[in-house]
Structure formats: structure tokens, C-alpha cells
Amino acid sequence: MNQDPRILKAALSPDTTLDDALALAGSRHPVQFETVALGAMDIELLQISDLTGYIDRIVETAPPGEKITLPFWAKLWPASFPLAMLISRQTPPPGASMLELGAGLGLCGLTAAKRGFKATITDIEPEALLFIRAAILKNGLDAVARAAMLDMAQGGLGETFDLIAGSEALYMPHLHEPLADLLRDHLKPSPDAQILLSCDQCREAAPFFARASRDFLMQRTQSTCRSDGGESQTCVLYRMRSRTNA
Image (cartoon, rainbow, N blue to C red; front, side, top):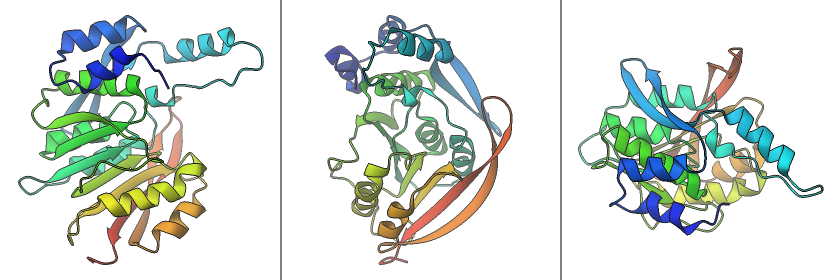
């Protein structure tokens, strides 16, 4: 995790302007906004201009034998698209709240905010939060969306939400059980409250579903999405509701 205090401060401060966020992000990488089209809805996401080149430089400059931490937060994963499309079709009641977990670039949370949710968009990486803050401002969503730090292994936010969403939140096995507990603790005790998760169909997450099945009823559907190379792949969408409030 990047420990530069300027990054986290800028990401979380309500006083940070778009110019501030872009200047700080641009001092670290070449960046640009790219438009993601979700039907009739467009979302502007801040991205590293040459992510492949950036990753190559990390690998090439790493000292021999040192563990390399890759910037998974900076990639727009294929499974995020069907989830964002599903959220783009939601019609939230007034005042409905949404939490995005492991947001990376924040596509799903930004989509929810555009649909009328009050969105809390979280990640553990300060730099991801800075990019999210920039995208919130670029999309004119400052009144309804915020970036927030959340370590899924260390507890929660002390709030509950009408909708919780996460794309590729299951790729780290050591987080499976903490994630199931976090979802239980952060979902509103309402029959309409739901959790939406998406992942590659190959994702191994048996411990997560074994733990989550105690608290949630689950529906599983498959969707086709595109990889960076344009190939089709199968993603899986999970809709979860509390057993207690069903």
C-alpha cells in the first residue's frame, strides 16, 4: 500500500478540487479520463494512460527476490461491466444508500450515484481513492458520492446500506470469511436490501459461500463480458438477500 500521506488526505478531503486530484495523480503517472458507456449512461473514469507499461516498469525495477505488489486497483476488470450495467437499471427509493467494496476505479459506485443512490466508494489503496475522488468530481457527483478507506479484514464503517456491491472482491482467499461477516454487518435490515457481487467464473470462493450461506439467500446467474483483448469470457453475478429479512 502507498503510504504517502498526501494521497490519502487528498482522496478523503471534501476540499480537494478536481485540479488538485489531477495534479497529484499526474505527478505519479500519465493519466487520462476515459468514457465508459453503460447503455444511455456515460461514466468518466480516471485511468493510468499506459497501465501495461507501468506494470512492466514495476517488474523491471523491483530488486531481485523482492515481492512485487501489482496495482490491481488500476485495472478495469471485465466482471465490473455486467455489475455496473445491472446497477444502472436500479431505481432506488429516495435516500437509498450504496456501498462499493474493493472499488478500484469506482465504476459501480459511480454508476449507483448517477442512478440516485448516496454512494460510499471504498478501497484499501490510497491511490485508488484518489482516482475515485477525481472521478466523483469529474462526473459532478460530489453531493452524492464519497471515497472512503476500508480494509475488509479489519472491520467496517459503522453504517448499513440498502445496496452493497463488489466486483472481483473474491480474488483474495484470506478475505473470504471476513468479507462474509462484513456484508452481514453492513446490509440494512430491510427486505429490499441486497448485495450484488460479480466475478470471473473461475474464481475459487468456496469458503466465502460456505460462510455467507448461513446469513444470506443467494441467486447465481452467468453473463458474458469482454476481456481487455476483446475475447468473450463468462462472468458470474450473485444477488444476495438476508435470510432474516427475506
